[in-house]
Length: 312
Image (cartoon, rainbow, N blue to C red; front, top):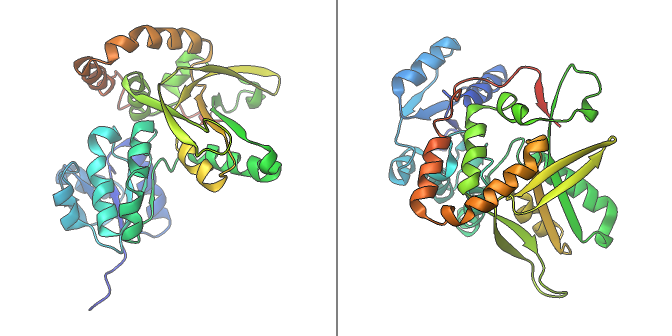
């Protein structure tokens, strides 16, 4: 049988993150296949980049449609969010096809769902890696380096994500504000941040010595912790990340893994209190659905983040 040609398949190319990925791929001489719901928009985008690229108009929420498109030799890059609403079909189709898959999600519930597909992906030789961006690659790398250096004496790890601005002096001493969470991020990221209020989070714990570690379900923002670095106190609230799943696999002696988001600055504690007060309401499925829909319609969802913003 003839060997299938290797393809890079990019989903969500017309969005902000997708366009940045496309730009980098083209700069490296790649010719990705663009996949999405609007053929005309994808063709217009390819024309704007002066690239003759193959496009495929597909319902990205249909596993069956995607299964007919994807091949074992493909590498799938997905930037289509919110991922719990739009991304499940893609990762399932990739795993079933035996294709390799990466995405840009920051949604803890989606990360957990992808890890649950591990047996399907492994049986077909697929490599499936969610959250392969700012969240949560740096935390996994920093955590792995710290744990490797500390050895088995380190049984607990806490990882925090923060924001800073470039060109403003000593960036390591910068204190982020609530405004930064909305000006230094993409529209999709802001939608995910608001939608997280209705999302379930988790933490990793070993209940007692000698027992296997488990994921503990909890609401997002259940805990607030202060990180001290470069003389600056930075509050952050607990979230679910891929570190909870990846680090214990690589370092099985771990008893506890926590991930925190510190984008909100002084608004962190008030946000936690509001989330706690709304927790009973969010157990109602209609309320959760309403918040999710509102998060997808935030003002400025098409606006790019400020050019002087970057992650710390």
